[in-house]
Image 1 (cartoon, rainbow, N blue to C red):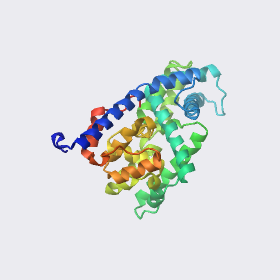
Image 2: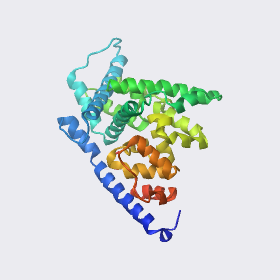
Image 3: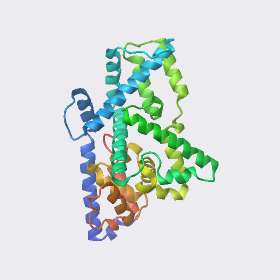
Image 4: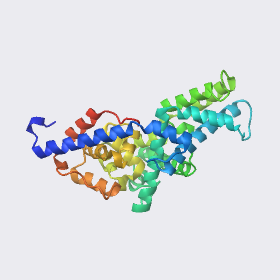
Length: 320
C-alpha cells in the first residue's frame, strides 16, 4: 500500500470524497431492513420501487407456502393443499422478521431489476452471457458441466423472479436454517412430528454448492487469473459479474448487489478498483451501469490497495 504521507493532494482529496460518500451510503443502507419490513406491513410508498417490494413480498409468501407444502407431504398429503390464509400469513410474517433474510430477498429482487434493465438497454441476455457460453464450450469437462448447470439454474432464477418466487433450496445455508426454525415454531406446527419430518427432507435435498450462487462462485473460482474478465458486465452477464465483484473485492455477494444502487456508487467504484480493474475499466463498467454518472476527478490516483483499505475501514454494508 502506498504511504499516505506520500500521496498527492489530489489523491488525498479523492479518497476523502470517496470515504465521505461511502459513509453516507452505508448510513442510508442502515435502514434497509426496517424500511422493507414497514413497507411489507403497510404498503407505503418510499424510495423502494413497487416492483422490488412486490418481489420481496411474493418471495416471502412463496417460501412460507413451500414450508407448509413440505409439512403437508410429510403428513401424507400427496396432492396440492390450499393452506389457510392465517397460516400462510403468520409464517410469512415470521420470516419477514429476519433482517438477514429480508436483505437477501431484497438483493435478489434488485439483481433481477438490474438484469431486466440491462436486457432492455444493452440487449444483455438474462440467462446466457458471452462468458457463460465460452465456459460451456470449455474443453475441460468439469468446467463445461458447471457452466451447463449454472445455465439451468440461472434460467430457473429468471422464471421464478418473473413469478415472484424463490425455491427454498436456493437459499444460503444459514438462511435456510432460519426459515426451518420458523416452520417448527410458528403457524400452528409447534412440536409437530410432521414439521420435523418436513425439515429433515428439506435438509436432505439441500446442497449449497449446487445452488445458482454456489455454482457461480465455483465457476469464477475455477477461472483463476482469467476471472478478471468476469468484471465486465457486458461479457459476464449480471449474475457472474456480481459474483466476481463480490469475490474479488472480499465482500458478501448481497453487498455487491446493493453497491449497484445509486446511493452506493462510492462503494461500487472502490470495489471495482480493489478488484484489480484499471481506472479506464472501472469507467467502462460505470458507463454500462450508470451512463449518466462520472467517476470523481483524480480517481485514477486511488490504487487498488487504497481502495481495498477504504472498503475495509468502512466495514460491511449496513443493512445488507
